[in-house]
Length: 373
Image (cartoon, rainbow, N blue to C red; front, side, top):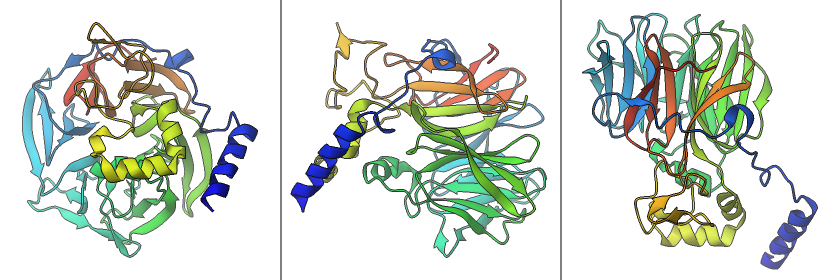
């Protein structure tokens, strides 16, 4: 049986030489490489585990980092106040129209924090199974809440396992404003990472990392409308997306796609042996940060010269923030290339003083004052 599996794979590779998974699109047009992320200003001291960032109406910024949620204030956002601390990692954030802070907590579920009450309210299960791997959450103007679970039964930190096992069991969850009546709206998704309701409340935007896809769904009284694919073949793995304040979106790309990783995903025997015998940090897989460990897998080609990582080398990690217009078309982008400092962009939000960016790979919050077109 193994012989025929390999034979069929070889036949497919000849017939479908330019198939979707092989055809990684180039970075051009609005996505042309630059060094604008590396010129962004770091905010305060490093924040190991920084993950999501959202802006409040009063100008404050909420940040999840490790097991804490912080509120940043002051003219330069340098004043940090701990808002909440959990027993596991805090991830996706959103502000509900009624003022509550919504937090995705690994291995636990969704917490709703009312400023007037000390203890959060929890949503811990949907569709008969626990919400172990929630990644992002958003709230519609009518108060309804939507959240995505990247991988059912897996913590967010195990995302490499999910990709290398080629799983597609993520879920989109919807519930009422009081975390009541939770429903599984979509199943079997290839690692849904980001979810956001449009500014007018008429559509729901969704990213799926392993499908390299951005979609939107009409929101109405009957629930979700049919899927509309906005971007079907992205050059990287999309993360969270947040409104830009002008009808568009800020989309984080947490890693670039490479031909080596796409090749490894097709080679089942190699991939299974790699996972069984090597630590995850050394797998041939995307990374949030890289280049500092001599044991890391190389990405084919000349990666370093005189000890310096080449900007144009095939990247194991990369920094990329994309601005989308109201139709979902890319209009501008900020990059930190293979030899740059700020990789692993998981989220960004628009504030009166500029765009605030979570560079998880670097463990830093950044701010750029230049307008994203």
